[in-house]
Length: 304
Length: 267
Image: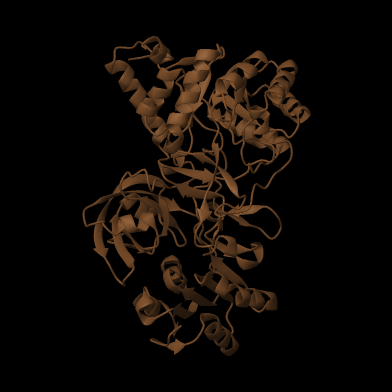
């Protein structure tokens, strides 16, 4: 039996499969999926300092092989999250990634300090790339801001940091290098691509917030390239995501250089898909004679 | 909240193309059919296509076949429902359900119901339970034309009074659904008013009635949604006290006074 475990920034995960932030509610909603303790880690929907309602509807719009969303991070706020959400999340898996978003460097730092002080997070994901927040993607499209926010949080906490970056840049490998230099322990590649749909019946933008973030299989080759090019540039590990629907997609991301993979939009289509993907990776490794999942990370580069 | 929802591959047992523009399906899936309660729905996907990729929400009209199957009535409106037009008896579909908050509040003795078009599909199971509990049901069924009524026989069987209204006068009265409801409410006192379908055309009267405080108004809402089980946060309906509710998790039935601008998602 192949060993599915991987080590992400010094922390061992029992397998490389995670939900992408905001696509698998782990508290207070129906649990349709499989056993949450059997995923590599759990990730909360990004939490902000203050309570937020999110954006006006419509918030989702289907596109060819994908969807746009303009949900806009509804959040219970950090205090409620620390009291209720995080302990409940912790009870469901022994590896937890806490995803946070701030509206200033100071807010990011304070959020990270609050999370770190509780000692319940194995990683902090800095969501530097939400296309549905005013100035949300700026954090990872402006290299100066990126260095400032990652560096600021780095100096404040010792918890491993995952910098989740926007694909809406000319050269994501360059931004990956900036995040690495500023002290990120891992990268989340990639968040959604900013996009637009127009409802021809009403002749105006389909989403309540005008633009949205595109995810789903439509973006997979773009996301895979982001992982590929960043892997060649940085030494820190990568959590790959963008349109993963099957074990084959997940394997592609790992061969391109991802240490772990996150499933996003497809959780909405097939709530059990992450467990099927894990089993598919297991079969693939066995059939191809690999001892473990870590053996295929970045292998496509070496096989070139 | 503990869920009793399942994602299953289910078999289509019967397919009827009636009336024109609608599909009437029976789907065999005992776990989902057995767990379904009034007000609930399923997310359904036919064919593992990439476009459309998302499943679509459809109300469970009723449970049939000794509780082993459920019935859906689907209006053909877009890419996913056009794809469903090719479904045949024996085909497999992917179904997640039952979803939505079951309706458990039947604390009334009488109700009036205004339904337009395919909105009828959402309320049959609710009416069956209301009747079982001895609640008097007074229904107004509205459509553009006689050929556009769905579930007309079911409404007749489940209503103490049933008034039909069409835009063109081809069946029942040539009248607006809300005008017929206004008259009905003037003639008899009911404890509650329910409405499904009709979108923005019905809201002005329903809001006027809610403000009158004679009897509270409840709406069955629908919305675009990606998942149907509270994870995507796509089907947000603004709440009057601020923030949003989710149609899939908190609905589909809402007290009108609790929501704001339901037209944003109520089509």
